Image 1 (cartoon, helix red, strand yellow):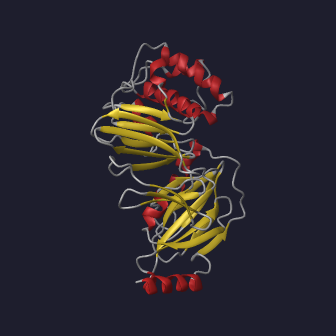
Image 2 (cartoon, one colour):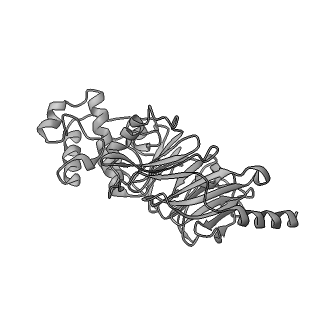
Image 3 (cartoon, rainbow, N blue to C red):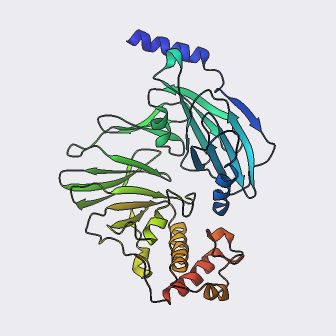
Length: 361
């Protein structure tokens, strides 16, 4: 077995070359920032794309990555325009975006003698150029599932969590499960790796540094069921499939949720009574929403609540218009769309919603 493994390594080095596919650049430059309001427009523009159906859309730091059956394309969002693409990869490809959004990781199952192994590459978001590439044992989906800024996380069958560098795949750190704990659920949020596990009648939520593997914070509750973990980052598309704020304000997490950011509970609902209340702090929640940016989360909760108030007839559009909160006759999807100071606009919307004597959830 050792001889076979060694031969595979030698073969992989000799045939690796450039990551497969046909690279094309449109000559367009990627805008300086991501427009969340325009992200949905990318999907609409791709409805008739000859490259086939889009299997996934991922937001990057400054754009949106569309994943096709055997290729990917990166789009800017202000305006929506294609920047680069990598096509004709010869088969399905799995894609992920690093935690800071600046790099893209593609992974594809090997063919022939490399069947059962995964070829993967790191691409620069802005240009699509390959930065590094390698082979791994994990499946393509597993390889791109947990990406920090400079590393990927590998989950062992025994519960071990290992961080490997994207630059050269060397091991950076590893964590063994604590003695009384079962297998962990793992998420990456910003520069933190969050793990939740059952430890002898306790639910333990921990945050470790993605760079060093050192524990930064920990929270425990008495309980015997793991909460579902949801991610909320500045790149989460408002109202999209992965948006936990949409589910919070519509009451879909009414079985109990907690917003958790930087090791602390972030209870926006305590001050804004129109929001569905969070779970009591001494009770294990059914849902933990991991927040990367507290100010961003604050704005999203208020703005999404405004949309639901409008839909349910709890507030008049004219009232929002008089307060200067509408853009082209509608409430914006993102604070970025307002011409005024987004923080001041959110405060104005919060005041209007608070005056309605109505609540959600």
